Amino acid sequence: MQIASDGNPTVLLVEHQTTGGDAVAACVIYADLPIVAQLRPGARVRFSLVSVEESEAALAERVDALSGTRAMPN
Image 1 (tube, rainbow, N blue to C red):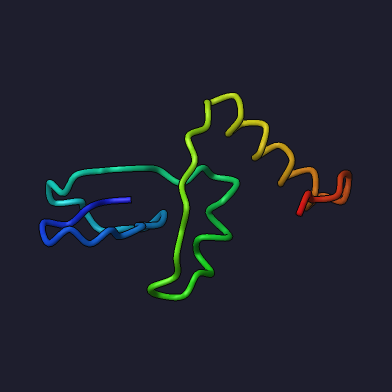
Image 2: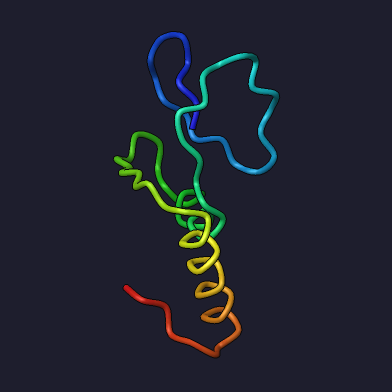
């Protein structure tokens, strides 16, 4: 997530343009990218601090759920 010079936050996905020097305030973990990609413009988003290990575990859960080996938590 970047903060533009006008103070508006923007979440850029995988194929985003070059950042042009805007401040990077947060990152979306890979496990949550599909959720963020489907948000409507102006939707409210809450970020939480997670460790690398928590991010990796969340991604493993998503992969397992998509492969049918584990149910996704709600």
